[in-house]
Structure formats: structure tokens, C-alpha cells
Image 1 (tube, one colour):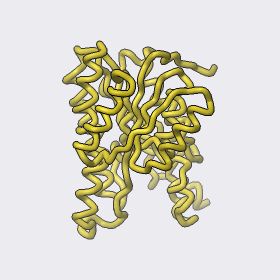
Image 2 (cartoon, rainbow, N blue to C red; image 1 turned 45 degrees about the vertical axis):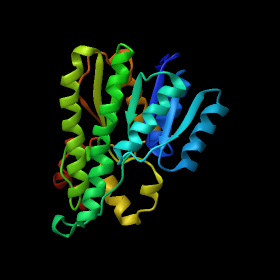
Image 3 (cartoon, rainbow, N blue to C red; image 1 turned 90 degrees about the vertical axis):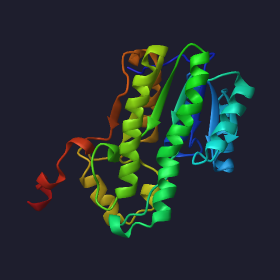
Image 4 (spheres, helix red, strand yellow; image 1 turned 60 degrees about the vertical axis):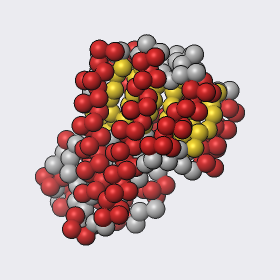
Length: 262
């Protein structure tokens, strides 16, 4: 069964919408009839997403944002209100990778930048989005965390800390606004087919897939469908949840897998 949502007359914001999961989610919102605020720091990629939506008959506008800057987030949201009059859905998706090193070797500047872009950005976005949704009588927000927000990972201390932070912030914010018809949840993707994965050396790609029980990468569209479900009335009793869409990464103990040895 293909589930289709009707978000006609609604306004959806997606950060990091210039590529990957963000682009797929922006396209999915548009296909469901929403007007989409496409936000990204990479203007060229964001404009490409807008053009893809418009060529398919949808409505979208690009908004520049550096999500690590509260002032930039505020300006983006002001632009969304000016263009569309309000906000009904938000997918706070923008994020970056951290240096892959043991914790004691992690550069402090890299730590601070990853905290700004992956965690403080969620706070800035929520802080601005929630009042807009209250003014519309309610809304739904989905924050992109990660399987790394549910488990630990070798040499991923900076990234892991931010994604655990997103999970915790999602829970706290969800409780604060549950009685005002604002639903806040998170999605926790595992490995996703993306340019980042394709650029990895083959042994790294093989090891990542070895730790994914389902045996393949997710598509960006699979994550996008999860986001739309969390924004839809089909999930209207789901609150403060961190939805694993990870092919089993977060529930497996890779050290117990021996089939490659025999």
C-alpha cells in the first residue's frame, strides 16, 4: 500500500534541503501539496531543489540559512512568514560530520562547530518555529538525530554527543508544548545512500554495511517518508519519540556476528 498525505494549504520548512535527506523530504512535502520553504547554506543546491519542486508542479522558495547562527535562523523564519504567512511543519535536518578521531585528538574548534551546527541549530530552530505554530493552532516538528544518537560509535565522540543531544532536546521540547498541539519528534537514520558514503574507501563502506543487519543502505526517500508520517495525523499520538530508521543498526551487537568467519 502506498500511503499518500494531503498537506494542501500547509507550509513546511526543511533545513539542509539542498541535498540528501533534506532534498528528499522537501520533494515529498511538495508532492503532498505543501508549500515548501527550502533552506540551506548552499544556495546553488537549495535553488536546485526549488526548481525540482516547481518542475513537478509544486510550490517552493529558497531561503539562505546558516543554522549554526541564531541570527541567521531568525532571518530565515522571518522570510518564511513574509512569503507564506506562517508555518505548519518543520524538518530540522541540517547537520555536518565531525572529525573521525579518538576523543582526546578531537580539535576543539571542530567540536564547537559540530555542536553549533548539529545541536545548537535545533535549539535555534525550535525556539523560532514553536511560536509560529502556536499562532496557527498547532503543528509538527521533526528533528534529524541519528542512529548515533541512540548508541556509541568508535572515534565519533563529537558527532555522537550532538546527536544524543538532539534526542534529549526533542524529548524535553515535546513535553513543554504537548498541551499546545505541537508535536515534536526525531528521526534517527542509519547509513543512507549519499555522496558522503560513495566517497568512502571501499573497506569503510564494507564495514558500515557489515554492521547494518538489513544488508543495504537506506534511500533518502525512505527517511523522508518517515518524516512525513511523523508530521501526519497518522502519528498524532506520537510525541517525543526518536524513530529508528536504520536497518537494525541500533539494536544489533556487531561483535556477535560471526558469519563472515565461516
